[in-house]
Image (cartoon, rainbow, N blue to C red):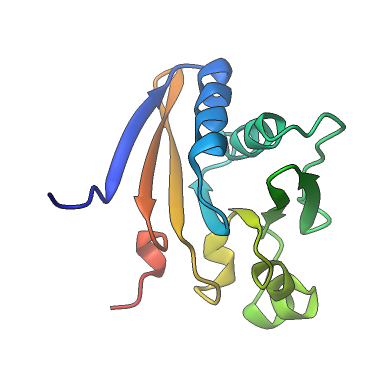
Length: 150
């Protein structure tokens, strides 16, 4: 049987996104780099917070927009939530110490991965798209389609 390379799921609301995140957290194999793609407000940060809550993070979960990364210790290991929106180039990412997070056996959730210009590998891509009042998430293996090298 051929390996399934892509799957989709409709997420009707925030509760559905959090439930999907909890299932993801229990199923994901570490280490893993996850590209989170989608427009502003598509559910990327909600998903990341849901994963962190499902992994037992009980304190504040801050957005990494200004800090580049927020790291959390969990029973399964370290989770790095990165937001590359403000990254201007691969050199900028390197200067901010971004590559160090990909050198550890951690779970890395990366919003705006296209800003990294393909300089880090991704194991999974989750694309969140608005659909009516909800969201559709598409899960695929490997780098985001726009970043794959031919």
